[in-house]
Image (cartoon, rainbow, N blue to C red; front, top):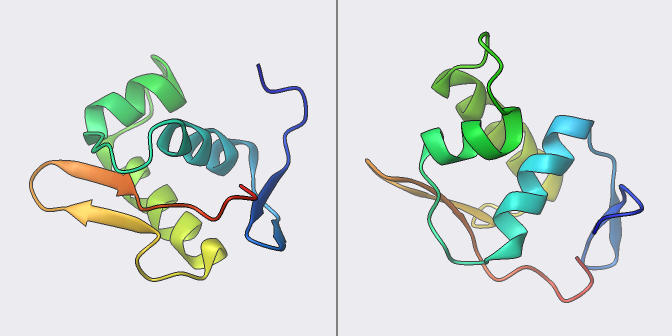
Length: 90
């Protein structure tokens, strides 16, 4: 259970929106596991009618920028996204 919505990447505290935090949380639960855009939509956005696969792409892009690590969130072409081995302080 997450009681504090605070994320760290290595020694650096991340300033994330609630949606970015939720996305990182899903990816960080199983580093290396590939999640499809549909799976991420279901787990992060729930059943919001306005959310699309494009929203996943946008949020992955902003999350990557905030992580500052080019390989932190890996795109698996045609399948989805995976978080590569996060620093232990995540």
